[in-house]
Length: 212
Image 1 (cartoon, rainbow, N blue to C red):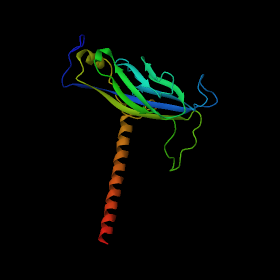
Image 2 (tube, rainbow, N blue to C red):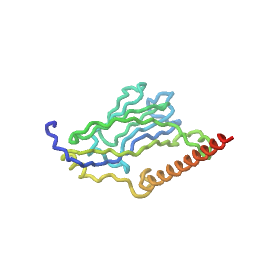
Image 3 (cartoon, rainbow, N blue to C red):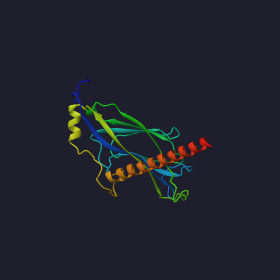
């Protein structure tokens, strides 16, 4: 055990929810200073709480690894908000590393996010209209960081701050909630039911063909 780290609490887990992802807008006539002429979008990559809570009590810093074509592609954000704004023209994978408070004695968390700049969804089964300046695109994901058997010192820090739980109902300030979560589960279950029916229909058609 490293010196200065208190003993771990066995059989205990503490969860902290986060949102991570990006927002993006198409650039108009007003462009940020020094934005290359070929860049078409302004985007922001972030890690934050479900209701924009300050996460610095357990997150020490966040490191974003951009595409190698960017100057100094490894960007470190050491204070909230843990976000980075840039301009660009193409989509790519951004490596995100979350480093936890020194008291945690935890390894950093490493994952990827695909930077999204353009609308993908069909509107009434038709391609989306051309993106206009200030039309914001969002690609946001909900996840939970689980600290298994945290040490006593870090456990006190975690318990000293509310658990950043999802709100119980939809709110304009938060795009994720218990209600939205259940609605998504319902949509998935409906989709699974449709797929299962299509599979059964296909099996029946194949069985009829084999009889011929």
